[in-house]
Image (cartoon, rainbow, N blue to C red):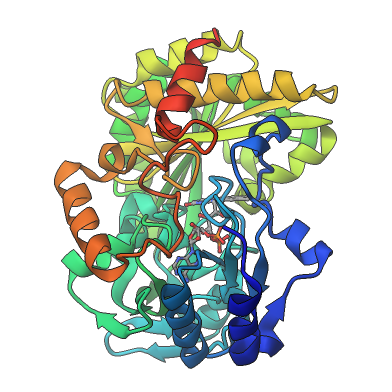
Amino acid sequence: MTLKKKVRAKFVKHLGKQFREDDTSLRVYSRDMSDLPSLTKIFFKNTPDAIILPKTVDEVQKLYELATENKVAITPRSGGTTGFGGSVTYNKGIILDVKGLESETLIEPIDQSVTVSPSIIFSELQRYLKLNGFSLCSFPSSFYSATVGGWIAHGGYGIGSAKYGGALEQILSLEVVLPTGKLVEYTEREDIELYVGSNGTLGLITKIKLKIKFDIPLKHFACTFDSPQQLVVGLKELSSVDPYAVWFFNPKHVEELNEAYGYTLPDRYLVILTKEISFEEEESEFHTLFNQAIRRAEGEILDKRYTANIFDIRFQTLSILKNYKDFLINEVILPVEKSGKYLQKLISSFNGLLHLEGELIGDSHYALLMYLYFEEEQSQLNKLLHNLKMYKNVVKGIKANGYPYSTGLWYAGYYPAIYGKSQYKKYKDFKKVVDPKNISNPGKVISPRFRIFPLIKLKTAFKIACRFVL
Ligand SMILES: Cc1cc2nc3c(=O)[nH]c(=O)nc-3n(C[C@H](O)[C@H](O)[C@H](O)COP(=O)(O)OP(=O)(O)OC[C@H]3O[C@@H](n4cnc5c(N)ncnc54)[C@H](O)[C@@H]3O)c2cc1C
């Protein structure tokens, strides 16, 4: 789909000041955090026709009205930090950059909530809340670049999700511009949940009311385990001590942290538990609980000196990537119960080269980031094969009762695996009503037809390709 002259003129007439189509902008917006492998670019038209940065909700409404009238695809984008291709166009069209939206922040101390624009960056919001004695409940580790709207639309989890849940659990209300241009407000969970993880395919989130909490001090505790099996037993035990966050690594990644940040951490599975603690008595009570949990899981407590200030690098772990010529990243959500075997197989299928970093996202599941680092620049073919191998392992996670982290472009078609079949039916019924022309972020959530061979879906094409990698 390429913008016809007459259609382009309509967008320029109404949104001219916010309209961009210079080569540099088009190139910047043709990718998100991870670039699409060159070999796959024949399947996608990831360079948009134009980018529009509306300033007001009225302008967003006008943009969607024009898009629906003229059947132009609109792909929302905020920080562009996701890496699942959700903010990249599948088949050209216009990128709606939310970061242009004027931002207003209103704290309501009595009901412990804050109302924000979707374009606000987490670190800015947290700074403002802390100045007022409050804090976000849960937030992603892409804290310095990700926006609140993008996190919700991608269906994220993060630091604090062990206690306060993921994006869905933070929302009290959402204001949305539907693909028809109509402005609506949702306060019921059954409506709100349609917008969490649907990647802007149901319209643009324009205002959010989030739960907040008092700014309680955080204390950190560390322990280690011998094997992946022991690690998951440990995670189960630790989930019972009401942690704020539980963050962990495999020995390969611990080695990397030692090298990159000068730590002397033991060569084992390392877990950092963070707890909200206001009083000294609470801390000594918690010590007892923590010790008992680690003893039951046959782990070892690690002296605090080994992990001094380690929480500060929560927001920097990707800076390690600059030490390598090439890298690949993927992510899967797994159940705590019985995922030890999956972890063991995953590690051995990459000959021990895989770096793992995980985060507990509730009592029962954890998110697992997998990284492959390369000392040498890889050929496009090699990168594609490694990418497919990671992809295959994420999909294998479904058999272990896990699921891909998010749909975006790469995992379009896995929405039912993530949110369940009945939620998928609700999503499809709603999509038909609010976006009958499928202009809002097409190619995401529901797997699109494979562009060069439209008899099959993209999801099927990936599955077939995965069969050819070991
Ligand atoms: C270093 C690093 C650490 C990360 N850590 C985490 C983590 O802890 N937890 C986590 O969940 N993710 C994490 N991520 C992934 C990602 O950064 C986050 O999910 C982030 O919240 C996405 O926000 P964004 O503003 O970049 O969204 P984008 O990438 O711009 O968009 C994400 C999706 O939402 C859609 N969208 C964007 N804005 C809107 C809107 N206003 N209305 C409707 N749809 C919209 C887009 O079309 C796209 O499909 C991390 C990424 C990096 C690089």
